[in-house]
Length: 242
Image (cartoon, rainbow, N blue to C red; front, side, top):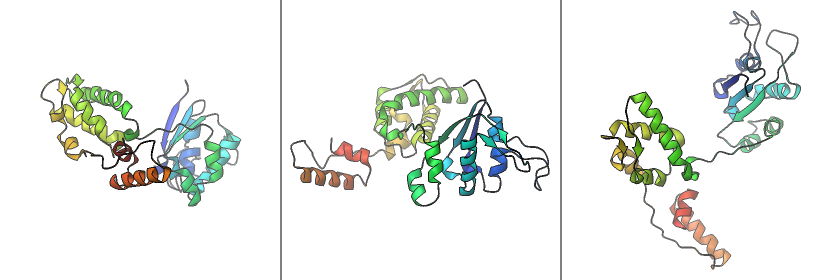
């Protein structure tokens, strides 16, 4: 935990550059190699390497990554010997890697090698109890960056935030709070500070009712009707079904 922390956006690694970026290279090993490069793995030696959006890693590099994880060694481009590395690997992705495996875009052996311990982070719409903490953090951040002193979020404004489905997830919430900080006339965020959000918010009126006493087939039909009304959004369907 006290070692280096190196974060890598795998989506930015092309098939040509990924081996050099991850494992390093020797000066002169290819045309643009004008100096030695350490590589992310060796930079993170003794610490943590965070591979963000690992699902975007080029397929050809995935085999090299698998070997490194298994052998705990890297071979920089242009060098004939392996070098030992000791890193903790953390990966993140917003896509379903199991589906990517079925499509042939991600190696199954690498998936199982990485998937020793999984933390599933729900989307904001599925974790509304987290919205107050996130919103308050973004409020403090925006105050610092924008030179404002908005100290609170009113209960009414928080109710609007918690009632929204957040298709843009945390990035959208952050932008909404920053905008609210700019438009707040006092030291309190009110619903009037959230005109864009209020305009986009959808009020759901239940058209179906469901209870534990109905037959399974009738229950299934009501769930399907709720999903149809909510256009497939499970959170909205759950609201409709109360």
